[in-house]
Length: 260
Ligand code: NAP
Image (cartoon, rainbow, N blue to C red; front, side, top):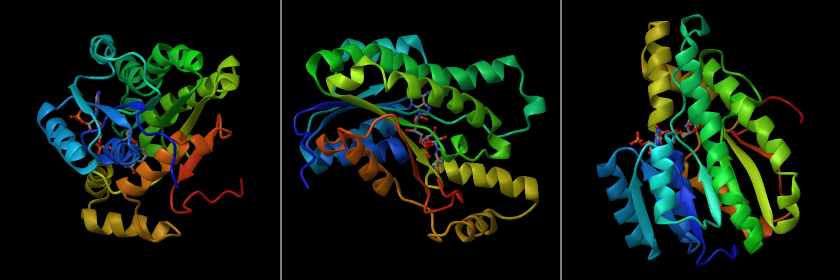
């Protein structure tokens, strides 16, 4: 299926590895030029070179912290008129809410709620004026089913979800702009490995038994791959997904037990 995205420009946050890179790869495979962002320049340059080689599209790496105003300014100094924006950065650390002070909360809200809102604010009116726009926020299954140790994520991302529910249904919806959230369950990336290492340490066991326990808790009996996550993201950005708006799409191998 041709997603009708060839020649468009996408901004993908947190894209030197993991889910963000999965999204950038799938979009580049559809002929989309991509700006990829991460803090660490070396891995980002490597990812950019591989993307260029595999897809032939224009790839611009920008090594900044997307959660800062300076980082976002550097991105928009390169280009303002993105057709597609995939918001993503690192998730907040696990822990016990009794240990989190105001600064910990501000940092989580800044990264996982305010940063996506700022990116939406900077791009959405241009998209509406041009008659096409796709915004995909990488959030988490924790929005639907909270994860006890990830209270910062449960809270901050729920705030973003509430905001998106409103703006997705605003006047931009009639101008060809959609905003959806893509909710990862368990995907095999560095982030989930480090969360599991943390859980293993807490439980006094090894990482492999935590990974196996997780696999057994998922109906698909495996973790997802960044590639399949990216392909769902590319579909949400496609011309075909024009009537899919304001949704929370859970990609979790069936782990969420609810009927709706
Ligand atoms: P990952 O493998 O750790 O990759 C994170 C990417 O984001 C890296 O490229 C990292 O590069 C970049 N990044 C982190 N902080 C950044 C910042 N402040 N500014 C710019 N780039 C930044 O993580 P992932 O598993 O792909 O997860 C992506 C998001 O999905 C996270 O928010 C995570 O919490 C969420 N999530 C993941 C899962 C899962 O199963 N993997 C499940 C639920 C939710 P640098 O460190 O060099 O900046």
